[in-house]
Image (cartoon, rainbow, N blue to C red; front, side):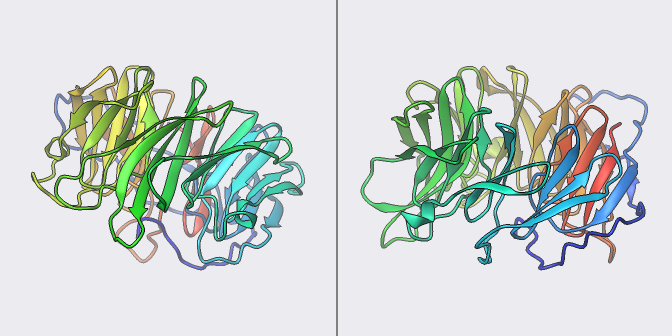
Length: 396
């Protein structure tokens, strides 16, 4: 499973800093240079806990979504501040949405919640399942600071006022005949919302992957693009990012596509063999994307590679690093690349030296824990959640 699903109680007892296996890992890569071994992160504080979701942090606190429960910790000491159970959080399905907008903590679970970050009080609840049966927020959400954009399992994208929870618009990601469509991980940029989706025609087991763009102000569908099916009938697409000229998404068969941001037309097609898969593999990978500035696109694939491309021309591969395990997420901050991988580790990749600098996490032992989401970061610290702990680490 891609995410840890263990049912562990989220205990709120301040724990002493725990030991963790930390070591430098030097990977094989193309065009490597060498530098002295870097300093690895140390634990400042830790708390027992459970989460498979990206945490968020502000000037005062760290916020973590567990199994239908939200927790706040003092970011300096780790002291618990408040705990808020989410209403109707009874499904075995877990939410993955976290953000800060309009002075509120935004949480996407079964419903979407606006929470007072000082007290944990729920200020508003957005429940599209009241109109669309079994609808739920799906995967990550995004915000431009005033509006929250959420995907669902009805093929819809919802725009919600971050301050009030009022729906601004709802838009469907395809104009094809009725089907089962799951929408993944919206991204908002330059007045448009971009999403990846999987479209399963009714009566079939086929997941047609694609991407769509929606006008962020009005909800008007700008374009919708299905990806080619080459080796199987499953081309599900689950992540998307944007560069100045392209929307970039990948399909389950291991192909990557660069789409024109204005029209959705496919500009670049990157073969699965670039990512180390055998030609003709029917089901290859789940992609995770990030960018460094406007010039480099990063794509992480399930076979343990992070590959960098020229963001202006995806056919130009820049470098590739092997990280010894399947990546579960990918973010860039201050030109440093952070990737939870292998289920039990967080690593940092240097784009300058093209190598994995360090990893953090107990591994290959009874103490191993699952790191399934990227951390939150500020200028001096890394905030990381697993299926056993919440950590505050030094930032090398």
